[in-house]
Length: 113
Length: 112
Image (cartoon, rainbow over all chains, first blue to last red; front, side, top):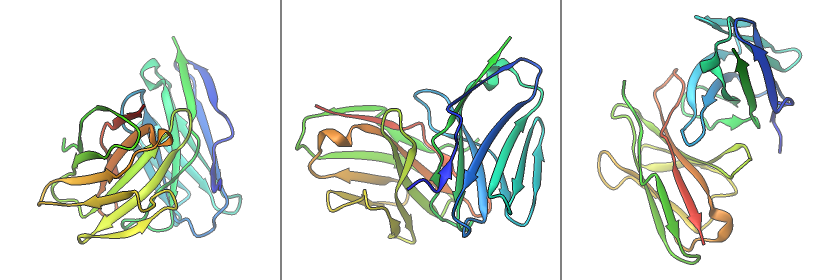
């Protein structure tokens, strides 16, 4: 059951450049999407979210884009910093009031100085 | 910043033994969850809890699993008879409406 897919297991980017992490979903009932960052031996840390009524949400260096027709979302980090190196998980839920999250497999981002 | 606290950070148990994983969610949150991540795999939903009862559970959450909120602050996950395949990181999370979930740092369960 892969309702949320992150097809790139890893991404390597130079410091200062843009990191683009991609996520696809299949369930049209999803209407709220979240990105989490995870370091080894720690829990996922919430980064940014977007409701299906929007196509873009920005918070500092992080921007999430949602293309509902393509069932695709992406996380842009600009400029990338070495401290951004972590595993990034995309997650989706059919409602934003207490619903379970369906996670993608994660993309390991490595930002090189 | 408020945190979700999980104890212990690492638990080793023998196959067939019962384990209880403990969590203290953020105090004003209303929804509580358990997720797990088997090494190298995705984070998987186990169960959600609202208003003192289970609101949703996955097919993983079989009769061997139970959750409880024994007092106003703790939220526990019990595995009655552990199996080798229960070895994983278990994450507790709590949710405030409209915002992203806050996850605890996890309990690494090792079943030997």
